[in-house]
Length: 202
Image (cartoon, rainbow, N blue to C red; front, side):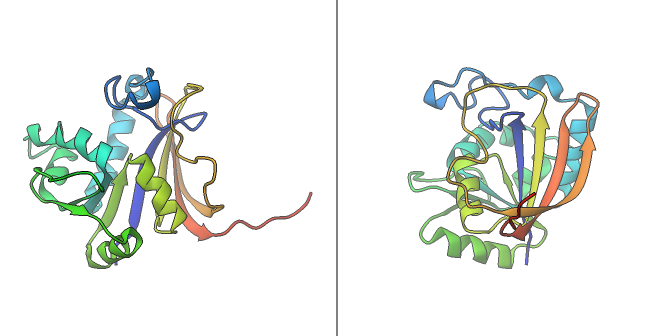
């Protein structure tokens, strides 16, 4: 059974919206897109390559799928560690509104999502990877379907925007399993699901 991993870019105040460019996701009047770009150094690139090398399939929310599908099929260099896998491996997009998915190898997932995603984990070799996909991430967390979190925290505060860990998130405990910091100051931390939090008093 595949491990389901999610890789998220967040600011110091937890915003995950539109890290890659101003036009990526302006929903809700968000005008600060592209905040991760100044930190995209070689260390960052190496980590992203390592993540994609472990992929067996991709699970994406509709908005992230449309962003990826508008860009990655045009990147045809077989040596590109991201494009080569996104273009060749199975992709599953969770959507109730998408009529069709033209990117080769894409299946639209509907219905009982918790059941469907659990079945995807069963039949995937390698990691079933989620990238971005905020609404999907919230659903997966609520149903304890995420095995591994890669959280890349960028040294910037925005004060507005959609957050990875939103109000109402299910209380969840994780084990910290890896850490590194890029030369540009991005803190990369990996966590594995550990169940529910424990509580005490000092």
